[in-house]
Amino acid sequence: MLEILDTLITLELFTRQFCCDLTVCHGCCCEEGDAGAPVDADEVAQLELAAERLWDELTPQAQEVIRQQGVVYTDRTGELVTSIVNGRDCVFACHDEQGNCLCAIDRAYRQGRMKFQKPISCHLYPIRLKRLSNGTTALNYDRWDICRCAIDRGCQLQLPLYKFLKEPLIRRFGEEWYHEVEVAAVELKKAGMI
Image (cartoon, rainbow, N blue to C red; front, side, top):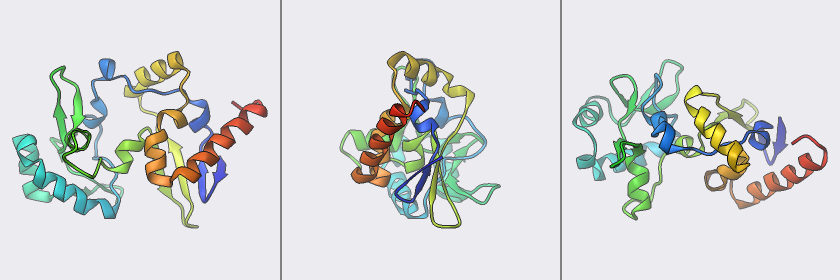
């Protein structure tokens, strides 16, 4: 682990090559798993607003889940997560013409219809954040076999995870923090660690 401005960062942020490949995985991370995406408490109101604004774009099943339990719930580990349909699909999952699973919130954001992009945990994936008891935030790489194609594509492109996730890392931690990550990458390379 590497410490940068009150964060502990896995070295895999620098060593893991990664780039999502929707042509292979079709966005199955929004449809797979046994719980929704982690949500910060301050994102709940934004998710509720998104559900209201995008209601007609959500599936009838997602609408019913939201009616019954809201946009989030507490999972078995005690973590606040997005509500899911049939024990797997995020309530905000939608599909494009090619059959790729996308986030309805992110799509609306990219079309200029929403100011909130999507939960930061989704934007940062495959990095997961964990708040430590001393106030430090740990950034950990989450291994999931459905992302094998992203690793393959990242290797082809020689794209380290910190570069692939530049936008969400800056969104969450700021420009100064990201600059320190870039400096650390240079130093790690000089030291032969990456």
